[in-house]
Structure formats: structure tokens, C-alpha cells
Length: 284
Image (spheres, rainbow, N blue to C red):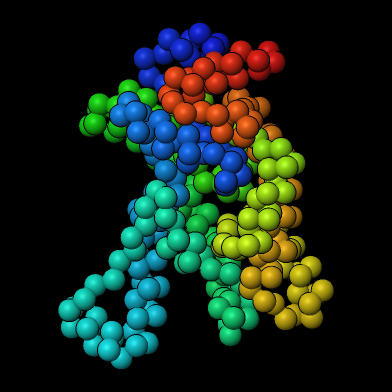
């Protein structure tokens, strides 16, 4: 780890962390809290994916639908209007909408092969965005004068790396640049995330082998009739269980804090204290 003790972390003139864990456990909450102090640069991996690496794909999908409306088609063909994604740190809906859900087209679903293509696009984009971390650390300091840096990773980071491989290129690059911090949820947190997802299912990225197995099991059980929302609801709880050991393996290269601890963070001072304690309690 780039900080060998809690005191070394406290004394470091440049504090650099990458937060990872299930979406909904506090990564963006903490990142926003740190950014609002004016001393921390907030690098959102999802935002980078949705702008730098998939922005054109997202905008083209919007245009494809707009071209089906004669009124909008004429305006687009005449360059009288333009369509763009208004993705923000707190609104990633354009990215989620593009990823979509597989299943019955009459219910808004994508053909499975198209869905897999978009999943692969996301995988490539997420890897590239993670590898941009060191560049943004340098950029944040040299261009904007930020001493401290927080990388707000995507919930699917554990799906695009091999946590069991000590030479995984993405994890190795991150480990050299930042302190990896796992925000670990409890069973109660997981149950709440499942309930929240059931109320408002959203597209997600899945590891290819996991997705293929889930699709095969679901289509077999439902005789090939796939309601898109029903499929991703059914898959979500399985995905959380699939991700948990992968997160835990990643945490061996960094430190672990709990979602309950993170929920209490209301200032950068409290965050610095939390990370110092996490470093000092990590087994040698």
C-alpha cells in the first residue's frame, strides 16, 4: 500500500484513494463531501465512461430514436438541432439507458446479442477509465492545484479485473497510484439494495461468464419469454452475491471500511480519521 501506517496517511501532503464497493453504499456520498471542501479532486469513473469513452455511442443512440420521428429527422438532417447527453456525476441515466436491458422488444428490451455488444463496450470503457486514474492525479495537481484525490469507481470494477491475479494490469496501476478502499456492506445493506433495485430496476454491467450463465438459466426457466425488468431484477441479487468475494479479494490490496462507518462521514477530517484507523487495523 502507498501508505504504510495511519500516521503516514495523516502526514501525507498528497492523499489519494480509490473507493470501491456495491453501488448505493456511499462512494459518491463521500466523494461529494470531499470535493465540497475545495481540497479534493473528485474523479468519477462512471462520468468518464459516459463522456470520454461512450459519449458518442450514447448520443448516436438518442439520434437513432429521434430519426424515427419525421419532425425531428428533418431538423437533424438540416443541422437545425443537436442531441447530446447531459450526464453528470449525480445523473448517470444516459449511460444506464444506453446499456439497456435484454428481453422482449415490445417491453423495451434489447436482443441479447446487442445487449452483449453494449456490455463489452462498457467493459472496454471502464478499463480505459480506470487506467486514466494516474493521469487525472497528475492533471488535478498540475493544472488545478489539488493536493488530494478521490477516485469514485463504478460498482462493476470487480467485474473488469481479476482480483486473484497479483499482476492484474488495472489493479496494479491503481495500487501504485492510490490507496484502495473497500466500502463493505452488511447483510442488511444488501437486502435494502435488493429492495431498492426491485422498486426501480436499472441496467448494470455484468461479467461475461456470469451473464451468459444467468441468461441461460433464466430463459430455460421461462421458456425463452424474457421480460426485461423481470430478468434484471432476478439477476441483481445473484450479481451481488457474485461480486462480494471479488470485492473482498480486491480489498487484500488495500483497506476495508464499513458502509455504516462511511454513513457517519460529514467532513474530510472525519474521512481522514476513518482511513487512518482502517490502515492501522489491517493485519500485517
